Image (cartoon, rainbow, N blue to C red; front, side, top):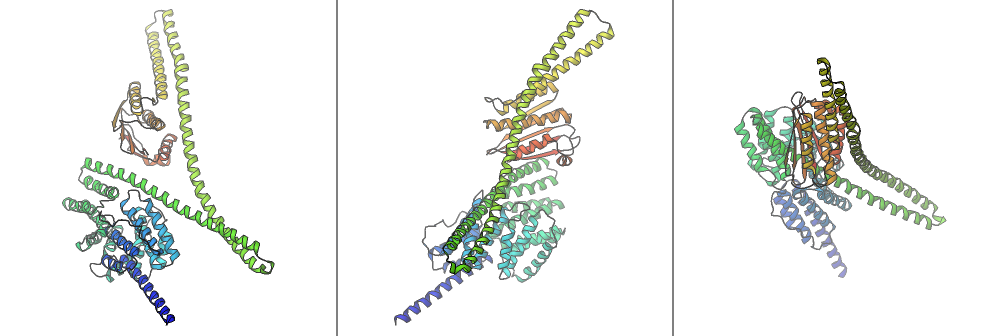
Length: 618
């Protein structure tokens, strides 16, 4: 009797376990189909309270995609011996960071941890859920011309089991193709043609149609077929797709139609779609939404010759783009750090296994020589794998070291330039300046001794005297300009204004300094670097531009300094300058890059030059 009871209990346990596994698979299948009602239903059937809670939380996060504050709280204290719950929690932590954090670096670590744990548990549907999270991460924050997503996408493709999986694989291939800087190849258009089949198979109103419609619109826009493109973009905006998780596609579809109507001259209609885009914008990730809104608004205003409004919108877009680049770089560093740590852990495991193999080999008796040889072979294979991994780590460390050396070299060059400026200024003032003053005195004494001169001799004397005076003034101006610097007590702004006034007087050049938000002081070495860059830019204007007016704009935001130097001189071909840049401009660009900033040169022949520098303060 006891034996039969035990068998029944074990059999019942296996049935319950199989039911729970199947229910979880159906839960993730519903999420994949964007059927959140069914997903929540399967979550409610979960027996484990911790798993049930995390499944409801995951469905809520994916339904709203950061467009609400009504989220379930993070209750990670619920006890559970189920290792799959750890995967659920890691996914939830990753999506919370992706949707709500300004700097989203923590999201990759959480998704990567979930992916590694899912691979150990070896459930294909769970691995696919983690890969889908990584695809969403790369879709939101991928850097241009990056292939970091490719191994995960290929793994997802190898696990596809139904038509929904094939739809997502096709969509993500197309998304990442269009994000690449390479020209689109036949593979892109082949996958685009597959969307036609998926579109016909799905029922009207299926949420999966919205991303398909949007990518179809993008495809026909690339093929220069604006009518069909606009038709698909308008399908994306159908009220049947008015869900929070589809606002990403609806936002960009509205902007695309706005641009098309603007180029056609239908400005009232374009304005309506611009307002629609503002309604669909992500209220949490405002940085990205504002960047696209301002970029498209600039086209809208510029087409109507509203140049002031267009310039304001474009300037805002550039500011947002700078911050987005910083965020993408931070996330890329975080991704590389996570992968590096993972490789180091794998190497530690390999080293441990190698030690164990040698210990086993040492304890193996002569009678087990063949088994010992096998272990030696396995150990060598592990060493080879460890060596290959260590070489990758060394390459990454070497790249960082080269960056550090480059920065050190530039700093050394700046210090050398400072010492050389001081030496040249002292030589000009003390030696050549004194010599010219002595020549002037001797020349005046010579005239006094000779007495009166004839008309021709007197004219020659006056011209010679004028040349000596001009040479003396030029030497004094060069000495003052070279010796100009940032006073430790006054700071950057007074130094720039003093330098501008001196150069304006000595070179008959009008230099205005305009500042906004420069009340506080910056770090002294940073102020010296910015001052020398301004000095070098003004020197270039004096030497090459033949300008009569120069304006220096200094603007400080909360965490960024904007410097703009513009003149009304001859200008030059900026595209030719990029390929044949002078040492001065190259030095400026490298210094700004190592400060984490950007340099923009806008120059038109006979219309002046504007140099814009954006530099982070942190």
